Length: 382
Image 1: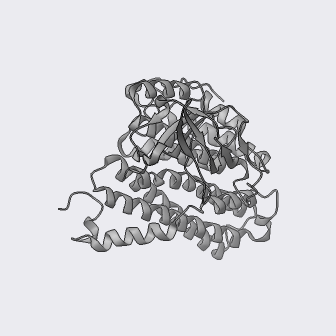
Image 2 (image 1 turned 90 degrees about the horizontal axis):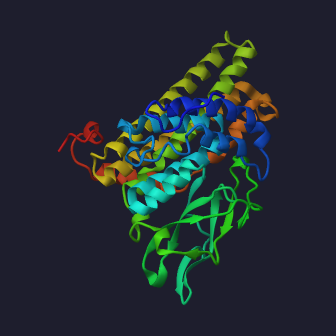
Image 3 (image 1 turned 135 degrees about the vertical axis):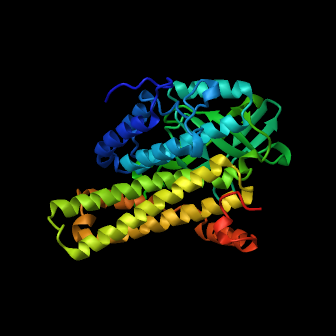
C-alpha cells in the first residue's frame, strides 16, 4: 500500500480507510479462528494514520468526526467494517475512547493520550461487567487501586489504552479512567467461542491490583453516561454494521454474476430488495451521525432518533442476510464461500444490547412529542 502522511492538511481518512478495507478483506479468512485478532490490520491503521485521525484538529490532529455531519467518520467506519467487521468493531471502540478523552479530559490528559494515539496505541472502551461483580476503585493507605473485571472486552490482550468505567471510592458515582495495559497481559479469551466475530479477541480482563493516579481519572463522576453522547454514540457501531451489510451484499451479487443468474427474475427481484435495504440503512446512518454532530435537537430527541437508526440498520442487515442466503443457497453456508464467514460475522455483530428498550424508548419520545411527525427530527419546528 502507498504511504499516507498522517495528520497533514491533505490527509484523506476516507482514502486510507479504502486501503484498509481492501487489505483487511484479504486477511479476514485467515484471522477467523478462536483467539484470532487482526494484528496486521491494526498495524496498518496506525501506519496509514487512522489511529491518530480522531485526535481533534485543535490538538494537531486530523479531527476525524469534526467535519459537518460527521460524514467522513461515518464513511471511514463503514469502509473499515466492509473490510472486516472484527476490525471495524475494534476501530469504533478506539474512536469512541478518543472522543471521550477529547470531550471530558483535562488538558494534560488530552496531550498525553493523544500522543499515545499518534504512537500507535490501540484504545478501547470497556463498560460491561458480570452480574454481582465488576470494577471498583478503592482508596487505601498506599493510594487508589482497581479491583475486579470487565467482560465482553473487545481487543482484550491487545488494547493498550483501556477506557473503563468503575465504581468510585466510597460510593462517589461511576468514574471513567484510562488504564495503560501491556500486550498479552491480564486477558482471558477462553469463554469467547462465538458463531461469528471470532477475530475480535473479546474476553474478560482482570484489573485487580492496578494502581490508579488522580490524573488517570477522566471527567466528573457519571460523565460517561451523559446524554445524548452515551446513547447517541450508537450510530458509530451502526456505521460499522452497514459496512458488513454492504460486504454481504457484494458477496451475494458477485456469486450471482459468476453463476450466470442475471436473467433469473426471482434472483433479480431479491437483489433489488436487498439494494433497497442497503441504501435505507446508509441514509439512516448518515442522518443519525448528522443529528448527533449538529446537536440542535433536545438530547432525548437525538437519542430517540439514533435508537431508531440502529434498529433500522439491524432490520436491513437481517433482511439482506435472509435474501442473500435464499439466493445463494447451500453454497453460502459452506467454507470457503465468502458469504459463509461474512454472514456469521454480521449476524453476531447485529446482536447489540437492549433492542426492545431502544425501540420502546424511542416510541415513548415520539408519542409525547407535539406537532407534525415530519417536523420531529429537523430541529426547526417549535
